[in-house]
Amino acid sequence: MPRAKRTVNSFNPRLLNALQEGCKREVRLSFPTGKEAVRCRQELNQLRVALRNEASTGWQQYTGVGIYLDKSDVVLKPKSSMYKDVLDAAGVPDTEIPVPDQDTNIATSDEASFFEDLKKLTRG
Image 1 (cartoon, rainbow, N blue to C red):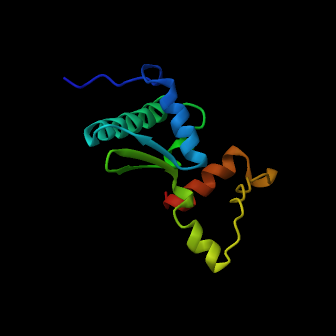
Image 2: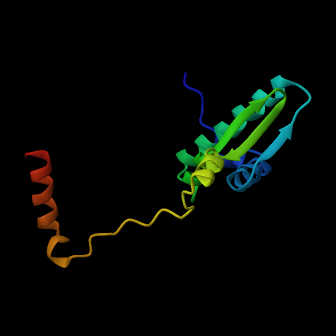
């Protein structure tokens, strides 16, 4: 029998706060044993899955947090900072990714044009 999926409400709200902080900066959670650290990492990953399954607002941002083990510590840090030092040293500017342009051309935005384009793309 499959295990019931956990809801976001079944987690400690402070775990979500820890993930939010991990999006911004490195957060280190220290535990008495490595076993407890592993259990916390599992809990944080389960929380991310629950956020995705419930399509909670902004769930995508929590996938950008790396959750790492360091002996008996759980380290949360933004994955985007992984190559920051190397990119800074190379002189690559730190700019935000631009929002993609949406098709606002009225001539190609109607339903019939959409299906014509779809047929062309799928050779159907």
